[in-house]
Image 1 (cartoon, rainbow, N blue to C red):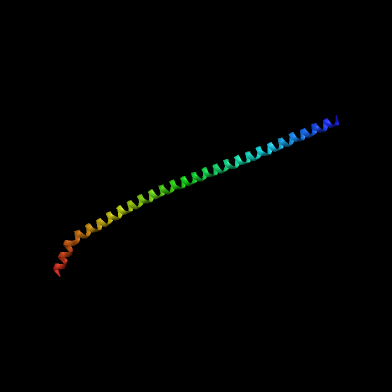
Image 2 (cartoon, rainbow, N blue to C red):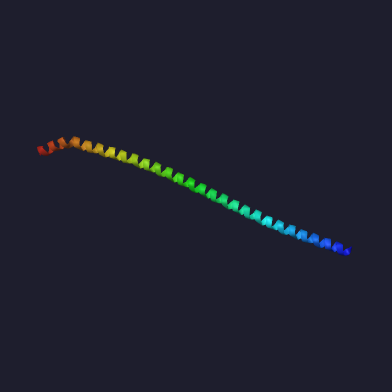
Length: 100
């Protein structure tokens, strides 16, 4: 009977060891899956940040290009106005030169 009890204890200890090892493997798998999910979420977040940054930069670039185009048109208009004023004064200038 004592031998049977010892055998039952040994079998129970082996079963417990197998359960412990299985639990340890499952825990490692859970940790690994968690780390992979975390890395995937981090990559997704980083990609989202990069996409948002790129969109903001593109919008800023477009806004600046529009501002430069408007400033260029305004400068052209101002230059043309000055040219027109100068042309309008040419006859006056010619008359003054001829009077001297």
